[in-house]
Length: 359
Image (cartoon, rainbow, N blue to C red; front, side, top):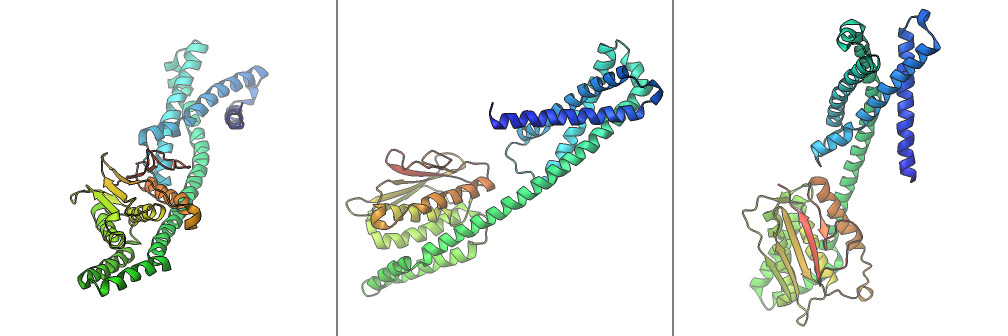
């Protein structure tokens, strides 16, 4: 038996014992001291164990039922508390009614209607009140735990967003990028003034987009793809026909996407792969499946030793983007067909990233 299984059994046993003892104590306090006997105590204990065990397992199943009903919807802690309390009230009332019927009608062989019209209704109301008090303590504790977890997740998302923005700005502003951009620009100024002008405009558009959208949670897919086109245009001035880009993304698409994320995937493909006349790099964008953008490039990796690259961006950058997409959508972010680390190096000679789109 695993440690987790033993822990679950311990929680169930402890909970049932506590509920049984609380119920027995309340039952004895409400009974007349003149009728107390060991038989009376045993009957009360047996009754409270029966109803306590039923209530424990019944209420323990509420959260799994709610998870199946609401699926992957990110309910706030307040709505989780309210739905759990409503579920607890309905579940507890049904269990208390059934167990009392079973106890009176089946075990004692008496008419439940007489019991209910007599003292039974009062007993069941007291039982429901006790269950509500106990449940409030447990659910309020769970509410504050969920609230703390939600705050922690929000802070984690903020840190990941800042990290993505930092990586994007670093990739655009680092000396290597600036050196290549200015070097390309200086080569164009004397040879092709129109191309040099276009280069400067596209470079300024890139920086403007980064500054305008770095605080946005989502941007239209087409807006992001226009930004990526500008970035690719700069790269094509540098690499020429050695960099091939294919896209079938339509302007009418109503989907949204995390800003800068696709550009980082393109930058990653260029950074880690050989781009030459003998080995051209092809990057394609497609929407083969509804609600999913596929970014694909042929795999022809540079030597990590020669490039001084440890692969840390692939490890942390892709996981960063993946966690943000899965936080904001119900889709699954996949790299080479896998949604969890470690990501495979390639898939049939290609590096493929499936990005879930958001409506």
